[in-house]
Image 1 (cartoon, rainbow, N blue to C red):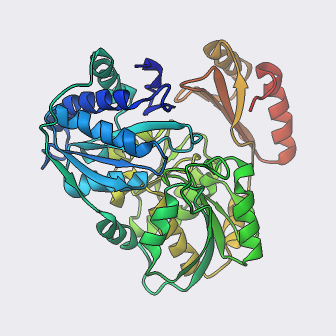
Image 2: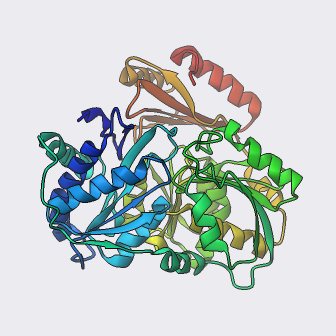
Length: 457
């Protein structure tokens, strides 16, 4: 087994060179041995079931990997509830709805078609990352010398789509006026989820890349501007209220307005702030530290408590639980909800966005315009050999600003700020800058690039 497939938050590699059915069996066996040990420490009580949920995405190799994974789990004596081909947020729903010890989703999210992997969650859908159990699972899995064992654990197959639909649509505004939207499923799980979840709602959907062919028309990553070309064209051609592009496993989404303009995910977070604070006044709202200052400003303006957090779903979900936050948003397109077990859901995000648009009865561009009050760089990557030394150099260079090290180095000034943080898996530094004006943004970006070199990617 290639130990490098174990990443900070999940398991991922090229199939079958890095990640094979034998590897899946070992990972399933190791996870089944490890996860039940977490139940006693889970604050919400004991699991009702020692079974694990297993789901998969639409990749051609996801089904054989899932079957091997299931056999490995059962060989450790644990039960399996196979919930079939699902979007990743349905896994979080299933774990909580069924009260299982955890679950594993077979997916490589936004990676190209030759990749696959596993997202592992514990009781309550708490993420299992390298600091919360994935390291132990790695040690157990890599120590296994064979994939032999009697699958004694029980196996059950469940179709949770009806219950999942009820869960998602409970948040939809009653008597919603008819809306037309273009949706690019990126040949991913949104192509299955959207028709099943929204079939009985007043939504007209212009479908783009809903087919599952084993290939992607474009990379299933909505954060890359080039991947939005189709949904932008469809919004303008078919006169839609807005457009949505999902990633491969449909846990992330990005919006474009009725003119086809990209709406950065932090601005969508800011747009939803007053909507959620009206539901739960003075609540905490969590956002990642790359987000525009407009997010913090909107939270304070509407009487909420801003909680700035480091990047990554494990940190965001913990902060949501710790503060009992009603809502949270990441620049990456993950959005988190108290009423969704503090986990992320692109489909529930879509529902709440529809609610806001319907209540305002204004074009999406008009709702977003007041939030476009700063100039942002987006995330820029730099290849750097000694990441820590470069971050320390940046902190010294801009020491007259407000410096913190929550995630990498962040320096704030009255008119501009930046965050520079290291990649977990590559020799890269990731830079985000925001300034009062485009001119200042260009000036400060040029200054920092003199220290970091030319951007890559």
